[in-house]
Length: 173
Image 1: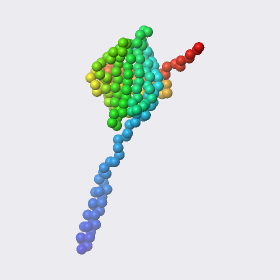
Image 2: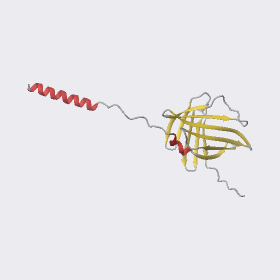
Image 3: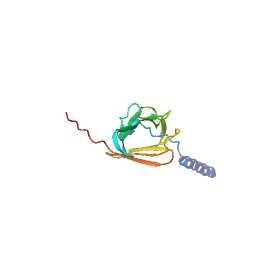
Image 4: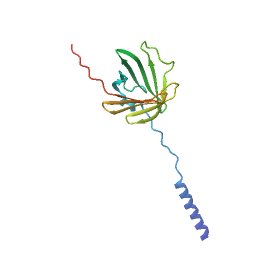
């Protein structure tokens, strides 16, 4: 009888220990991404690039998207215009961009598509998934007056573009 009692207690202790060591199923969900998390992109930026001027203006987030208009001018001529849209897709973000030549013809049949790779406090990185798109594309606001675009071209060349807010316009009448 004493042996049976000791065996029963030992078995109960083993069951409790084994149950306590088993990992419990996780009930935590992946973090929910909201488009408002990208509000830091909002604003106008410009900088010298290859002897020209790149201007980029991001509209505030709205309706699960944030959008930008980009213009590159050189020697008194608009070289291209680009429209960018970052959209919430499921629990992630997707970026689409389309380049237009001066007469506003799309430079490709379909927009370039990028999927979210990494998101940080004031930085977002995408990887290209469509044919002919850059391999990587990131935007980072390193300071209130310093915005960086980095990308790796389809061919593998790394490019960094530093932008700052445009000078304030002063109008006199």
